[in-house]
Image (cartoon, rainbow, N blue to C red):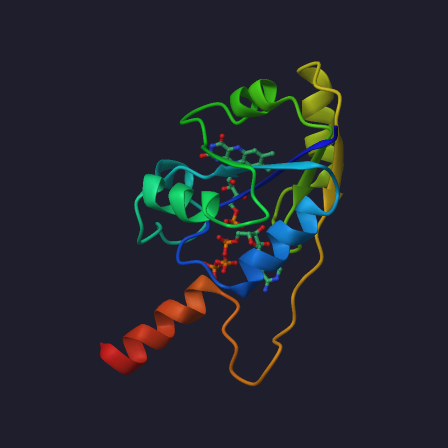
Length: 142
Ligand SMILES: Cc1cc2nc3c(=O)[nH]c(=O)nc-3n(C[C@H](O)[C@H](O)[C@H](O)COP(=O)(O)O)c2cc1C
Ligand SMILES: Nc1ncnc2c1ncn2[C@@H]1O[C@H](COP(=O)(O)OP(=O)(O)OP(=O)(O)O)[C@@H](O)[C@H]1O
C-alpha cells in the first residue's frame, strides 16, 4: 500500500486542481490531501473560502481518499501522522524538492518528493487558475 500526499490552497476548485490530484493519485494507492490554513497563505491573497469548506470540497473528489486541514504552525505534524511514501508538489509550487527532502530527513521522515505535471486548457477559455476565475467574476459581476 503506497500512501501519497498532495497539498495546496484549493480555493474555488477548477480542472487544474483535479488534474494535480489525479496525477498525485496515480503515483500510489491512497491519496491524502493537506489543505493550507488561511492563516498560512502569505504568498498570495488570502482564500475566499473558509478552511473547512475548501477541505470538504477536496474530500468530495473521487480521486481523494482523505482531505485534512493543515497544521497552524508546523507543516510536518500532518505528514508524520499520515506517514506517506511520496509527497507530490504541484507543477508551479515554490517549494524546492531537495530542500523539502532534506527537511523531511532531518525530522526522520523517510519519503520521496515528486512533482506533478501541468494541465493545459482543453478548450479556448478554460480557466485553470483560481486567481483568473476571481478576475473573471470581478470583470463580469463587479
Ligand atoms: C509538504 C507540505 C506540507 C504542508 N503542510 C501544511 C500544513 O500542515 N498547514 C498549512 O497551513 N500549510 C501547509 N503547507 C503549505 C501550503 O500547502 C503552501 O502554502 C502551499 O504551497 C500553497 O500552495 P498553492 O499556492 O499552490 O496553493 C504544506 C506544504 C508542503 C509542501
Ligand atoms: N492548471 C493547473 N495544472 C496543474 N496543476 C494545477 C493547475 N492549477 C493549479 N494546480 C495545482 O493545484 C494546487 C493548488 O493550487 P492553488 O490552490 O494555488 O490554485 P491556483 O489556481 O494555482 O491559484 P492561484 O490562481 O490563486 O495561484 C497546486 O499544487 C497547483 O500547482
